[in-house]
Image (cartoon, rainbow, N blue to C red; front, side):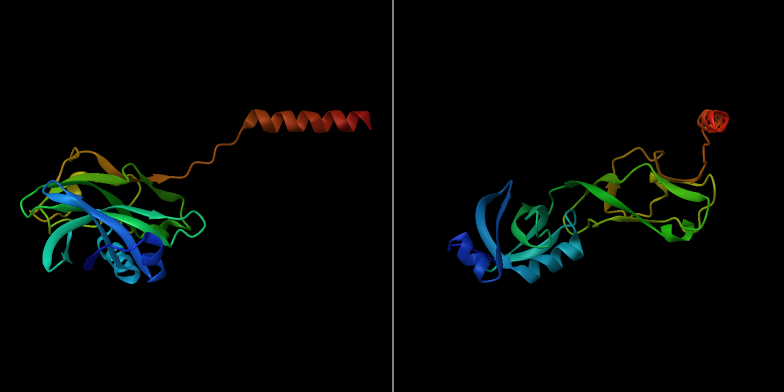
Length: 197
């Protein structure tokens, strides 16, 4: 993704269909930047807010990840500002990576359902080796099956910091609880109404 140093007012930048932002890091001075709106949205779609990727600014390449994106309440798809954190090639990145369940639709007509215990997983990795999300396929799981942190298939470049025995998702059965007292009370009220009549 190609970045530019921002020198014009924010309103002018937005009128040019670009998004203003800021890039900073441990060894990188905070710099006002701008980027084409479509390029930023493509980067968010491809890398999320955790995965590192390369950008070019003033002819130099940098490893960054998207730390923050600001949108409007009425138009959540319109990005009005963004933050990029610049990291060194050997600087470890710590991030909370979201968990995405695949195959949930296979339970829509079933009495079973996937009970998600973890929606994010803490991970550590070097720039260029992160992931945007952890995907867990639950379509083949049966009642009582549990998918744990240790069951994730990871590359050697990614280290998960959560307890490997922690459950990510477990298949449960839907139980319908009938309130007997409420039913009895309703029947008594019906009898009273009949007696009055």
